[in-house]
Length: 415
Image 1: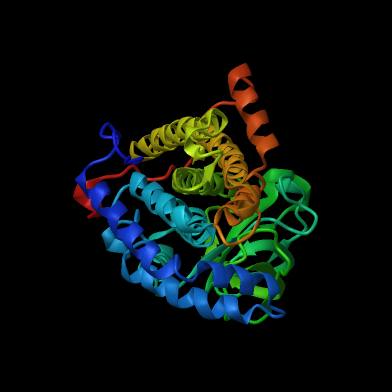
Image 2: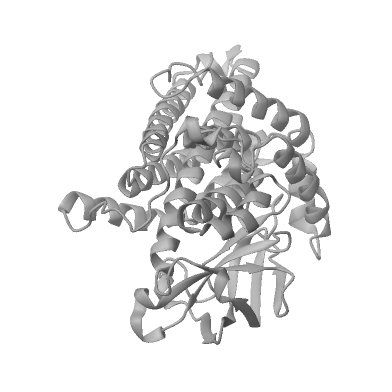
């Protein structure tokens, strides 16, 4: 059965061709190595294995146009729409979460923020090399003592002539040791709360920028995650993204894009769980018959089918709204909440179907479960998504337009 069919109301032939291209890439260049990468990431003392394997793969993704899939061609991108971004994330996470995480931070959180908020000079200087894969980018919001409560951050940026002096530490940063550029949120006026946060584009090569890896992660072991420290880093005022005090808005707009990619990736993980479960259920026999004939196994597989379709439809609705240039915080939040919870539940059922074999890395489902757990936390916890949906339903929150919205997809101008 083709689990990617019957979405013609959203997708076209170009999307189908893209899906096949990404699937071929992931199955050829990631799948044969992912168990070894996952193992080495779990046991490396300094993380060199992770850095050594990930950069060549990212360079290949750049050559295929994936890192700038939904960035206009004039800025070095592939000029496709936001639904194309979802498809890339689906197909990468169908094999493993680590490379989808790259799409989330490099493309979703960083590059799309530059497209949405950047000046023409900033787009030419940073967005163009990022979209073409010549440079890699990360997003720095979370700190050791502030996650969901972003306003509690301690990082500061003090104006000094035509520059800002940045100080602070960010943690749980994907590509921390690999990225060339960082989108950093810091307080320029601590007394103003959310209105006192400003966004900056920071280059790794600047004095005072350093990073370190995080070891012992439960999941996404094949990816680089760590902390980034800014010690009296001098950032030119020209590297401020948006106006002073707009950093919180920029951070939340970035999370709309990041959550969209996470939801799309989680959809791909559900499909991976479903495919693995079907294969095993048809091969494994108990009591003289394939376990696929047992009703409770059928029940778990049917639940995966339901979760896959509902997750994909929610993601594609959010992508359709992005293509139209419409604010989509409610729709993206719902997609992220539903898809990530569904992916974890599907991975849990996949292990149950595999029985004892599902508990070892001889089969991929144990890795699916470990990877799925993180997505319920990052880019906004499950609990935050629940509260946001309640606030929208109760009329306590609205999808109000921002000063600068993500550009609507325009094929005539983008390709």
